Image (cartoon, rainbow, N blue to C red; front, side, top):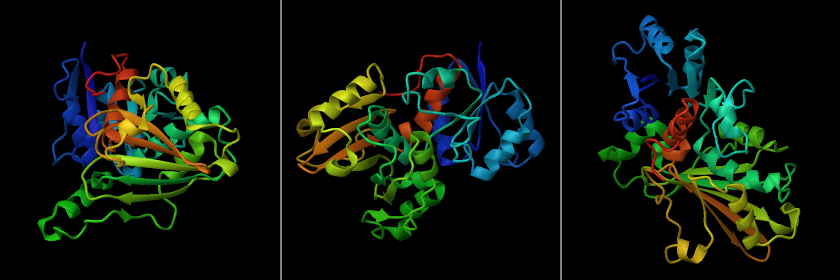
Length: 316
């Protein structure tokens, strides 16, 4: 049996990446739409309802419009936009989130792909909150640096335009109104009373990211807990999860004391490392913003929803 797959938004960054990841999968039949027909509602509606599973790689408004066109109750949908991430009728697409999340994804017809920054933050904080190390009432500080591909085709074109050579050499903070679009899901999924104090930035590299969560021992940590105990907690929480790597030896992990944002590129792996001083603790999630932070997570969810081997088409 071949599953029919349609990527709505196949010409965008995420859509192109998903197409690339699926093109040699013999158990899948990829339905395509031409550039000329992509805005033809009749053509698109036919493909949306013919597919066994649809990826939505669209802006939020367009994503909601496409969902309305799907009348086939058997069609499964994976939405890569922010449109449905706090919608209780949709399943949040981090299979490793809780012991029951994978089963929820498997049995759902509507799954949303988490944001890349949100994935790093949520996967770092969820075990700490579940084990009452961090309280949902706490105000957590988080900073993230991502490759410029996280801004989609528009930002990629700007960074790679020869006219801009030498213009964007530094790390560039953005969303300085402190209201980034991933904040609602960060707060909602973790059940936080306050959204994190979150500052994202773009680096002068195409893909890869570091999500850094800062904890003040005297204020945020409900237990007197050491780095090694936190590492053991993570190892237990994510035990058996093939796409999650918990770093035990941070000295060996670092490169002369530095942490490269790009070492998980082209994988679906997320790495969590922990650092501490007398007063503070730092948790860093390293992942590919186009992998576990976007297209990789989407394909992982597809594999689960179709009852396939979860790691098919994905690199550890």
